[in-house]
Image (cartoon, rainbow, N blue to C red; front, top):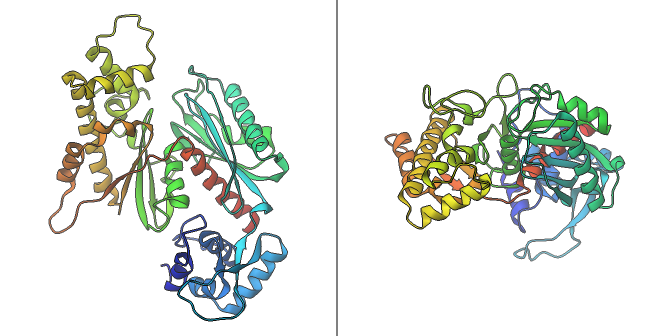
Length: 419
């Protein structure tokens, strides 16, 4: 738990720092010096005495470990402003903070509509960013690697840095990813299956790389920078070109036994149902994702054969007509919303999260989370004597996935630097 002293150090001013405010409940405890470093980064600035109470260790141990980290250049001493209610006089308190300039990481999101990257310093502060267009057609492995290399260069240029300052890179990509092996098993816009992309990138860039599913990175963004920092467990459901889920339990992102679990979008909800782009039938994604809405829109909007309208244009037209009262268009969104309610209900049944966060570009289509949808979700999950699971809407912006990848890169860089 978070001690009261640790909380008070956070609440003296605005919430600072980045990373989970709780210690992760790992089977193997992290080295104490890493726990101390992460407690400092989570707080932003914190006094030694508060670290000792938070980690339940002696002040002498904090002094020894912090001295080592100061000498290595990873943290530094700084003044802590006294709270306005503190009327005592004397010298300002001395606290500790992460030396952001000690290293940097890059988080990257690759998609079929645009690629983005954020550059974070070791304290988690964004110091650079880059966005580059992506070709709409399917790409080869070589093409993706070239795109990633260009993104890395652009992000570094934005902050006037070079590759020597980087401790790690993390990449998010849609589809099925084996995190442990570093393989992209399947991605809707890649030509090749089962790509050992992590090893390919590490060889090309000469920097440690981590790869994960893009929905997991939304959960990482919330866990490190958003609403999930102080939550023991929560789920982030993304509605984009597909439907994904990132699930946090015990303050740790869960990936399943083989590293590529939590595939909400490919959970079967209709036997022999609509064809999903993964090649199977009846997946949740085949009813809620953008390509599912576009498939229905062809009929509802009576687009002529050979129409040159892009999927994005068709979705915008479908939404506009639904707002104008087109009953067929409204029915498409209503049907997708009902299937989404079933998917969310299954998340609650399986995991019982304290909070579900809905995120993603498709959240601008408010029919997907209208009160009728949330009401049906509550009806499917309501149990006597307990309140319904809260659902919040978080539409961060285009760089949220890259920010989540940055959190993954920070975690890996910290592991390499501190054990």
